[in-house]
Length: 314
Image (cartoon, rainbow, N blue to C red; front, side):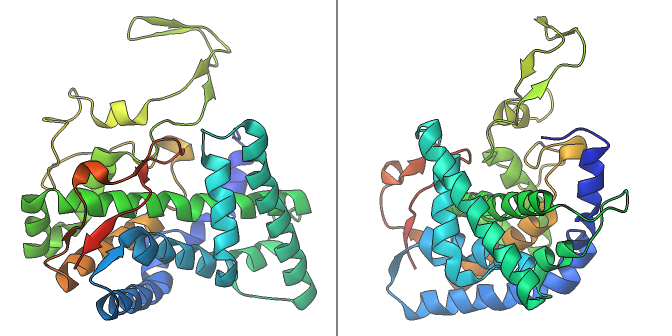
């Protein structure tokens, strides 16, 4: 929600923790361990289980807690607040309750880290970091960054993980290709991002000048909202755009946004998906839906499109 130069100054405080190299070197070993632990727990549990509760939700929560230095035992509180904040079916007053909870939570967490001199995670680092002009971040700025990273860093990936698993369960040939050719996991994730587009609509933008776009007249000051799902299914950009094809050759998609505001955590999300999806189906090759497809409850009212519950049998 910022323009330059303020946006760039804040972003530079964080980019070093989210580069492909940083994710591979610092986060991937932790990710490998927790994914294997959760797969072991699934193997030891009931044959039929909810994949959302077993993996899609806890893995992203663990990762963002590890990155930020947030206690994992608080996950139920911040996840519930995030769901309330992002559910468009709620009134503005009800959604604001989720936002206020997150602000209060990060405020208390920052105060506790200051008091104890904690050094774990991004929040602790930001306490002593400066912005591009050399000024220490204000308490309000620091809390705002913490809230943004916490709510944006787990719900989006959880939605993508659940919906990707459902999609691979219903696209047998594509799933078998991914498993037979491990080198295709990267293109598989990118194609799933394009095909599913869990963030259906981009944030509101304001036209800086009068312009014409596809025959529509847009005036300076008008609100513009990009339909991300339409862009990712544009037949002018993607051949057979409504078909899932993990061998698709594409230059880019809109799954992580685009330009200076592209998703800061996209390399973390990619790492999570590239780790979970192949290992899940390698470990449980007979994984299948436990209910008819039409009975899978979908999330139509949240900011992120996904599945609310995914009952599967291993």
